[in-house]
Image (cartoon, rainbow, N blue to C red; front, side, top):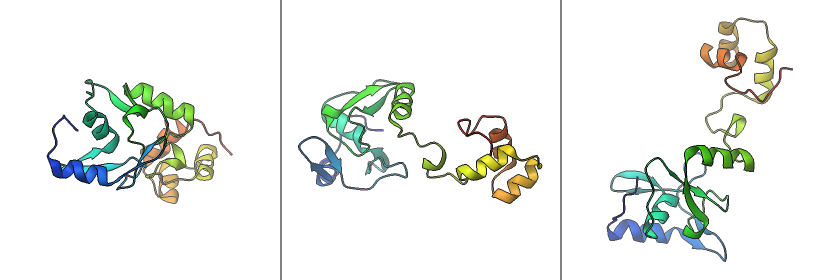
Length: 154
C-alpha cells in the first residue's frame, strides 16, 4: 500500500504509463484480473489509482479505499478519485453494474445456466460438484442462496 514517499525510478515508471486525455488520465500499464492498474513499488504491487492519490498529496484514511468518481477503473486522474469505505465502493459497483459477480468474476467456474441447473437439481451435492468441477461447499452455498442469489432455478 502506498504510504507517501517513492524514489524517483518508480515515479518515472508510473508517469510513463499514463495517457492524459481531456478528461481521464488512463493507465496503459499492467492491470490485475479485475481491470485495475497495478505497479510494483518497493517490491510490492500497488494499485495505480492509490499511487496517484498519494502522489497528488492526499492521504488514504485507515479503513478507506480510493474510489473512481468517473467509473473508469484505469483512470488515475486525482480529480476523478475520492476516498470512501469498501461498502460505499461496493454500492458504487452494484449501482453502475461493474461489480465482478457471477460470470464477470475472472475466477468464475460456472455459467449462469449451470447455476440454474444446480438450483433446480435434486441430485446430491457430491454428484453436482463432480459434474460441474466445483467443490461441494460451492454447491451448498448456491442452493442456500449464499452465492448466485440473484439467479432463479431453470
